[in-house]
Length: 246
Length: 252
Ligand SMILES: Nc1ncnc2c1ncn2[C@@H]1O[C@H](COP(=O)(O)OP(=O)(O)OP(=O)(O)O)[C@@H](O)[C@H]1O
Ligand SMILES: [Mg+2]
Image (cartoon, rainbow over all chains, first blue to last red; front, side):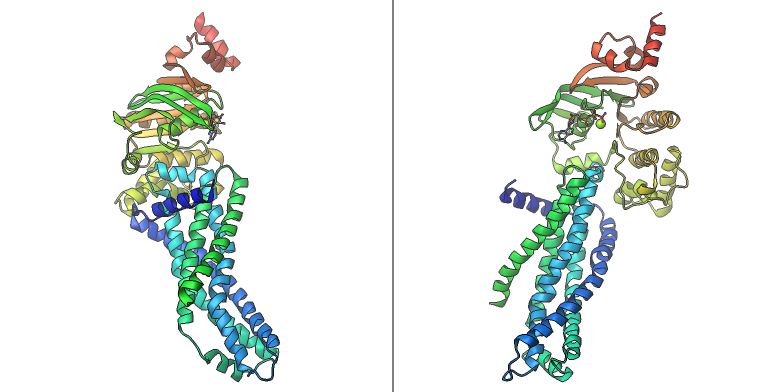
């Protein structure tokens, strides 16, 4: 299949996923389950990664700016901006693409190869809607919170690491993260996280939904889901940065 | 009644069904028999629209299914009950939730009514007290039976069963066959069953269609089948020595 055919089939699938639900209550129940499976269960990994990345960013910035003319609080400022602008949305999205994307593709792919999707269709249920819509909504709704958590934990990690390594004092760090603060950066990051959440869930669902074959193909679908979500995220990161920051 | 007219289907140029026409009668258990790989599952999937046919048309009570749009297909499918060859139970739902699924999705029944209906259907397939188990915790035969309960929960007008009793012991197999026949008559459904089990043919084959290599070779009743002169069908039927002896006795 060519790229264009994939995009066409993907668009049709997403359109089907947003068709009117047969029964709202059934979709709502799934939404709650997916919020737990995709969102709540990702909080742990987001916290761990954000903490260490915040720490590394701060220490690296400190060592790269060992210039007596630059005030130390700039380290805090630089760490803050990296975390807000790129880290809390893009890097977290890439991590989630690995965790959530493979999960979605293998779940839906298994349902495909064991004919569970056919079973839904034969009952007169829109399988794309029932399986995919709740996943998209769940992650889109929770991604901004994950992003906020990542910001807070990342900045905290930077502070703890910076102070323990003796490259910056608490006072300087706190001054730094407040200095020339642009609140729009947070909005920017949250917007990106929502779009990335949509990409991860829809692209991974696409790969799962069109799995053909058996267990081997389910594995392939789940790998492809991660790779393709990541590429699309990076591509859109470029576009969004241009659109939102220029 | 379901009518299939001149349907053909091929995969990547490999013909699997060749110009098949059959009419499946209402209130009867219609059997499709044939060797493994003869095209039974593909035929059934064409009839219910999981595969698009290359040629030909399918009619449900006189209405062309092939010509229906997505919405109309969705509606008529709510009157379908389907048992897949591999059961296709929803992994993430318990036995009870699996059987209840269509009630949840398409009816306004209250909790108690649903519970009663689910228990009734599970009783009919001899599976009381398994409500809270998950598909992974069931044996192959139990999965099949849950799938049958799920298929009949909304009293379908059309029931499709792909090898309902493969993997079941003879006793349970007969029970399932009888169950399918009973509910077919009780609710005047049009039932199509794929099987290669001669027992089923003799027990419930009010109408039997034999396909081989994607073609229809014979149709008739279980009464007529032992007397057939059709070579392919005879080879299929009398692969089993016991049945061959039966025929010999019958001939005398
Ligand atoms: N999705 C598919 N793509 C390509 N070929 C297929 C597909 N499904 C079935 N076939 C081919 O069609 C032929 C008939 O398969 P089918 O599953 O209908 O057999 P069957 O009669 O149901 O056999 P069994 O009794 O073993 O279930 C086989 O040769 C199979 O390889
Ligand atoms: Mg089959």
